[in-house]
Image (cartoon, rainbow, N blue to C red):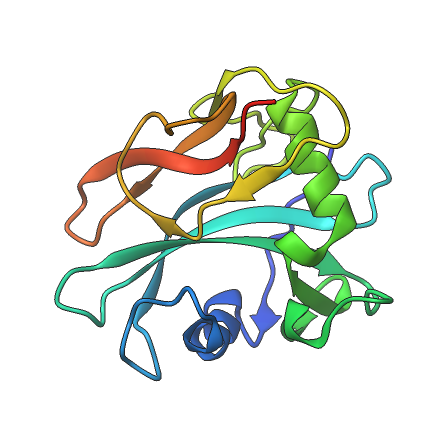
Length: 192
């Protein structure tokens, strides 16, 4: 199980995402500098113990209506060979582990493999900020089978407990800036 270190990261994850998020074609805001707050998420363990995996939910409060985004993150001790340039969110100095290369997890094979394992019921979601602590609020509804399942990650989140035309869905919660707690579909698998 991955250990959560109580230390600093410079720049912080939110600082990196503030610069990266507006460059994504799925970003709905009109601000060059969104006002991001951490709103939810969970972690998955890399069976090899090399890659940190976090599914972070951030809310952008810069618009009239806040927007929730899901950003799967991969934390690596070195650059990911063969990754497209746009996959790198940035680098950060971790107070314990040193330089971390932080990638958009949809481009990282370890992250996508563990997401598929979770959707097959073969991985356990972990609490976002506590070591060795399963997160029972993260649930999978339905079934997915096979290594080659196509899991679609929802980047812009909306409150909902189900996805249409999906054999399996990953559901988790987040909080809006006013404190309202909601749940929504983070990822879905199309039916075979």
